[in-house]
Length: 164
Image (cartoon, rainbow, N blue to C red; front, side, top):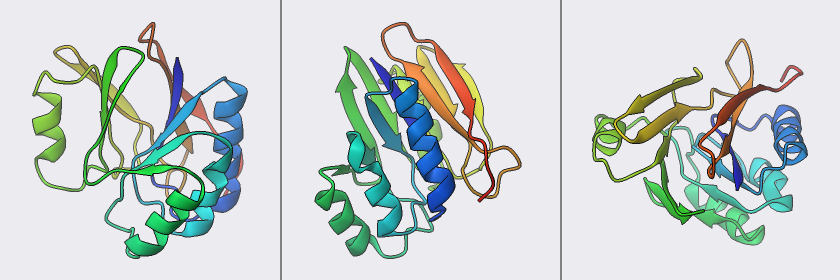
């Protein structure tokens, strides 16, 4: 199963739409959003694919975002998103809460841990856990998202063309 991971969309609709299209084109079956969504219009762009969200430090109107997520049939998770999918344990956070990501990545509990906040794409391994930041679709020189094949463990950082 392939999943897409995005973060820090900050209400940038055009580039977010391009990212979703690219992930769907590459056969992602599910998208995880690592926070800093910003507005309900952004959430609605995810209506064509099963999507799960956590909030970031710039998600200042959570009630409106939760309503939009429910409207598209998405799932909102508290501070930490957790899923068991394709026989893998997956977690994701925004990454702005001090020490949270480090505790999760060293817990040995997850096969994959995703986070945002820094606007910088990076991937490393902590024991059995692949830890990855997909980058950002706003305030990043190169706009990127992540595509992960949960079955094989292979991952790819995808560049999303266009400015926004």
